[in-house]
Image (tube, rainbow, N blue to C red; front, side, top):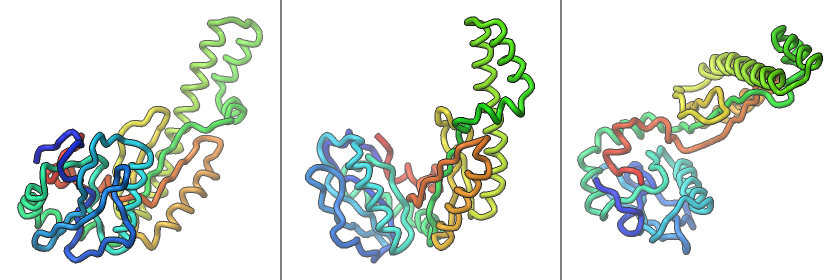
Length: 253
């Protein structure tokens, strides 16, 4: 299905099982917020609205999109669309629902009762003293820089510290991943993020999400001298919709 430049057409938020009710007072993206509607094809339905003109990834609209997906997931599984997915018209959406019905239904079955939690791991802040105590090479470079101050000595020391902090965080990140993975149904690495040594998304049973987040926070305290852990969630299950499932319906901007 072709995608417009988000100036006209039908904005697609999610695919659901048929007969899933829209949350009360739910609205879509845009200013004023777009009116939501549901279109049905067989065992599936899509939540859509008119595509607002000149839609951009403003914080207000990003939050509106995500809030709607999370509210929908309170009543059943949701195959979430990324922000900015626009189809030419309702008929093209319905045609793709019909063509991919069995695949979409399988994805919804897999996501039922589950949410996504993302965990990012970064080098620890304010960990220099712990690093110096552990790393002989850094200690030697720091002593040399104090004996003979200068640009080259400072540069070598800075590079050594940055590299050591990153290595320590990466090692901690792999231990954190091993600790968290058994508590999730699945996990997938996310795209590289500047400054992160780990960016991992976990598919977690909704009933276990609070315990999972508490465990991530506990690991953050345990590894605080090596790494900073940033858990985020619950989130729509973006990372657990296969590459085949989402683009068949619509493409991204």
